[in-house]
Length: 496
Image (tube, rainbow, N blue to C red; front, side, top):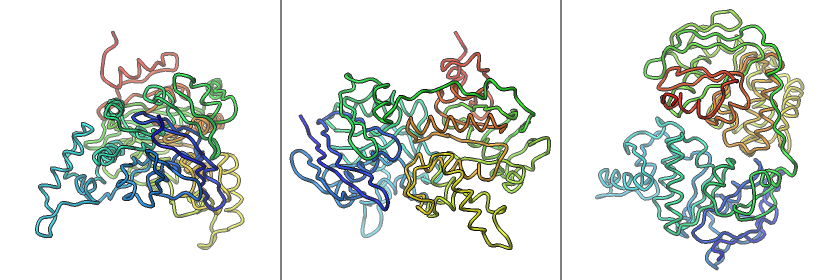
């Protein structure tokens, strides 16, 4: 029986029709998958339901009654909560303060700290998260911050929860805990709308699946009546063929990056690796293994790092971002919104941000050259944007990721450090990014790619380095690639 109904939902942004008459129904107490390419309208629909945005047309019915929440608070009062894909907390406040921000407990006009901690612990306990409520949100990893956001939604007692890419930053253990929680919530009669690009998750967790494409409803089917291949075809409107990367058949060039004895206190130690021209080397490991910290140190973002790093046989001073840039090293960070892009700038400005020194004369930017350079790389990466002047914050996650990559291509970096290249990106955009990384390797660039998705590394890389507890646990050649082998090294379990 339908519990939540969408009828003709329409939403326009400047130059973009994000939702075009979307309509489907969701059954009570089920986990309903919502899938589509980046820009298909999934997150927009979830935000409209959660009161973050308002629709331009259509109506929503909840348990037979028309609802139109105009704020997150109004949605919460209706029993609707949302776990956002992009984290939305105050980094300089504690976990407890963030969880209770809308309803701080008071005693004689002052915040009751004891009650605050008690409430926070109770909310965290609903998802089994073992976190100190007094820790600042800004000090947590992306994965742990995501868990706090899930606790904030579940702890309100909502009867409808929208989960927008909830597992995109979680470790394997955290993801398993999330799955347990989703099944438990379904058992309590809570209705979940689960937005994800990970088809294996949707088919494991969800009862029904709705596909959106270009802002329109394509299909709603029971998971048992469809297949992953059918869903992908519905999403992108064509067959998706994943070919073996071309760079694997090409001979390797000279060594462009060599790392010896790289260490940083309480982060990682004894890191030795090398990457040659035309090679993609993967880095696997569970969340907290030190993967991101290593690539950040190679880009000069860790002043405490020690060891020897050479780029094209020239020693690279550690702790200096300017030295890394001058040596032709570029970093695409895991968190594109906070570290990879300036969201308030437009597509042209973000694409050319790293290349500005080459585009300026006496402090003035040569605008014609800047526009030509931005046009070249946004076209090459097939960035979907109304124009180069569109503010980057208004783009979908996949197109923002393409801009984050284009920034370093525009600077012509020879060594690319890429942390989670397809985080929060749909299967169609993933295929395009994989093709791009393959092309870059074929052009003779050296790529060090960190990813939490083992199939991604297995499909892309020539070698995979596995990190565990801040050190290298092993190296796996392509001939020996398997998820089981990699997971054993990640977990420190010997082969049977």
